[in-house]
Image 1 (cartoon, rainbow over the protein chains, first blue to last red):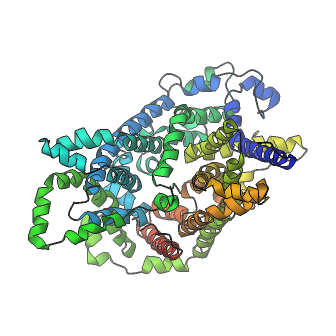
Image 2 (cartoon, rainbow over the protein chains, first blue to last red):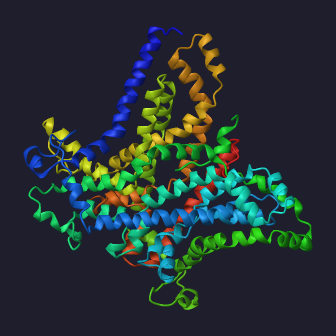
Length: 296
Length: 330
């Protein structure tokens, strides 16, 4: 098809506008990455730079990720949170989604309503805090797991997926002498793998990024996840963690990085795993929107 | 996908309807329950989660009507002596903070809607018109990215942009002969920063739903329009936009329904006492006065006020959506 002049002009303007918008989305993060690579010496000479350092250095990363550093510790805490939170989340979400997908189940509507209502109304900050306090989860790793174990929205999405699995499969398996447990594990589990992978990834990203619960439930710096160490460094600098070796060695460096570079490096460290699995994230999250969710 | 949006937004509860027809008295019910005991056993633990961590806090809201003392046992929560009726609510309504935080909540949400709602639509329209697939993919990939940053990371990036100690924006201002500004402590700028950050983080992601709606438009519509001599812009304006107008209206309604969530985490991470006057919202007030200030009962009362209002708003949004022919969320 031959394009008219007007059509070509339209295309070029469109591409130009989109390119500008794309830069608006990209530049803030890029500039943080480049700030993280600035050395103290270069900072003294030039100030912080708009796009790239002349001689990028990794001293900020060396400092933050040194032996025994609180950052390394927080990485372990967050990783544990992601693994346990995702594993238990799926272990609780999948069976309930399966049960709710059984059309013959007596009381299915009230049970679904019971779950759905929690999406519209909740106790709020204070009652949740009082609950966690009363069941003695304060300052415990499990305070980051149990209160957010199941996401009701995702549960219902998983159920919708399983509603589409034909019931004849179950009947056939039972005819062949399979027990209900075997039906669940050998028939429904393999068929549900796409939705389990999708929602598992959602749980993983959620747990990696979640921070507010730890902010109110956890005091011990050794139990804090990465996001909160980042927050601490952003708002008060690294000084508060000087009790933890690794960060304390700053003064021994010949060319200590500027404070802004340290903050930027901490941002990059916290985001790196998200960036590494971003291709998967993008695919699975976009698929999720088609599966029936709108993340508000 | 002929009716994509309804499928996408709704949680399909009406599919459950046939179950009611099965009701044949107590004995039949019991027979069915016994038959499916395996299923109930499977559901028990996950349902216990909802009871403990979703419904117990609702029961805990009774402390909003008490003078709750965290050092007393659980028994005190149910003892009649501690009830004070609506004292905390009237204290809240009479306090000098009330109008300010309600105004801030509504205004910040309103600005986010006013500026943040049209942009994803425009973005989707532009992306939809790109003919070079690689460019299209790249734009989408980059524009979705900030959505996956945690709020702490996103706020950190905004701080890094705006800091007077060599932040990108201040460097640009200085380079053009201006003076570095402390953006985040300026009450005149703070709400604009919140709105801009919200657009940066969510606009790309929010465009997906409109792109999905555009993907369902029948190509014959464009061909017919082209035959009638419509140029590209006219096709966009008279074919694409009307075809997704229903999606636009429905999403707008639900955004309005969720208006009381003005961005708690975002504000908590960026604000400071010098901008409380323009940025303190209901949620941040509950956090500071209730949790940090340890006025649990008062905080619970303010939180309950918000939850009830939010429920009513969502209910109304759903009614409007149903009225417009959408089946609504429930």
